[in-house]
Amino acid sequence: MAEFIPVPPFDLVVFGATGDLALRKLFPSLLHRFLDGQIPPQSRIIGAARSPMDAEAFRKLVHDSRLKFAPGACGEEAQCAEFLRRIDYVQVDASAPTSEWGGLAAALKQGANPVRIFYLSTAPSLFVTIAQRLGETGLATPTSRIVLEKPIGRDLASSRAINDGVAQVFDENRTFRIDHYLGKETVQNLLVLRFANMLIEPIWSRATIDHVQITVAEELGVEGRGDYYDKSGALRDMVQNHILQLLCLVALESPNSVDADAIRTEKLKVLSALRRIDAADAVLKTVRGQYRAGLVAGNPARAYAEEIGRTSRTETFVAVKAEVDNWRWAGVPFYLRTGKRMGARRSEIVVQFKDTPVQMFGAGGAPNKLVMRLQPDEGVHLWLNVKEPGPGGLRVKSVPLNLSFADAFTLRYPDAYERLLMDVVRGNLSLFMRRDEVDAAWGWADALLAAWDEVGGEPYGYAAGSNGPTQSALLMDRDGRAWWDPE
Ligand code: BG6
Figure 1 (cartoon, protein in one colour):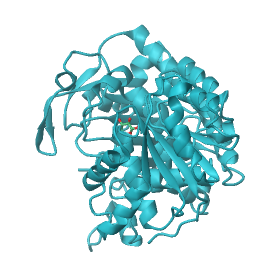
Figure 2 (cartoon, rainbow, N blue to C red):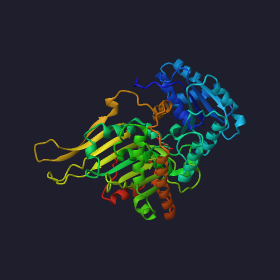
Figure 3 (tube, protein in one colour):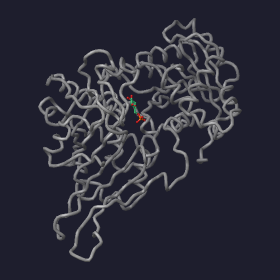
Figure 4 (cartoon, rainbow, N blue to C red):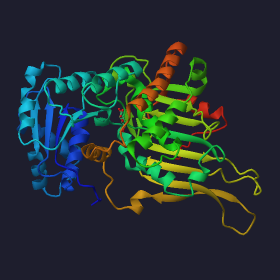
């Protein structure tokens, strides 16, 4: 079992408790923390949603989703049954007047714990209303915390409106904005790799690095989320948050400590240095794509338009050449790419170093590359040039020095939400986005969205199961580079 830090007893109210995220991620993550003994016995977990049902029916829902999403979690069923007993359910319509919030008030009144958390796993359009109701009913105490799931709005203006509304009830230091990528073990490892190894930081700049690639490829399509996704698209859904956060962790200066504000201030500096992309640049530096029918992992996959049941101009793939205008990164492009229905699920950061100034061994080999594999097959691979064994001649070959985390650590990799939920209970904001970070990321994304509007046109088609539209390869090719797409 992994080591963990004990947390105080807590009351956690999950709004949107019957939704996909809560059932797929939040409850299974809480179950794992419970099984490891991290959840103190007095703690209570209260599901809140609009559907009329009693606690028993809700427990059954959680139980069934546990069987689906965390099938092997419980060695003994009795442990799972014990976890389910901690769970209560309250029917509440978030937009109903305060007079209808009595059920939740009654549930929270009995045996209140020192830490009270409200987790909003709902549409962002409900964030402000729920926060206000919590204020009006007095359920939000001066120490209560609120957790906001992404997306925080759909542009800078709507994100500001949400943050302003929530701030009327919850201070910034009690507001936990989730970007679940920050809870992934391998993403946190980026900081450790960079700042706990003397080897890396001195070569981490334009002096030695040619460019950086960040790829988050998914096999999944939009599944049942077409209504949300079609209004969002890949830029808002993945780039504005997850991918920019990854970029920040690769590019940030050394924080003075692991203190939340020290790290978040450095991330903000990177976001502020991201060059805005205008209409003229959008044509050269970005590619939008949308999947057509194809084969993903050998299975036929429908086109996006067919999945959502109408034609659409929403992008399901984006490639962007981003630039960070500061001393460390001037002239080092960050190529960002994400897409649904691609050939394989793969999240990876590739740091490509410059070639040696002189090629004294002739052709052969390749510039060094540090490949940080975030998921799946988590690990770090450093590609070095070595002499190919053999008596005749001297041939240079590029081979990887492989560090597979599965081989190095035999522990189960916890889901990102396990760590993040317990960090909320501990009051640790390091892995949550500060308001100014979200604003800066939206500022950059808004400019690109406006540029795309000005340019017009449709996303390029790409076959499901491919690496995206050919224009994405051309974006790199124009710069004399290529995406790292190992077979
Ligand atoms: C979510 C997006 O934030 O992240 C989804 O809304 C996406 O569209 C998901 O599928 C990817 O997360 P993960 O952890 O599976 O890489």
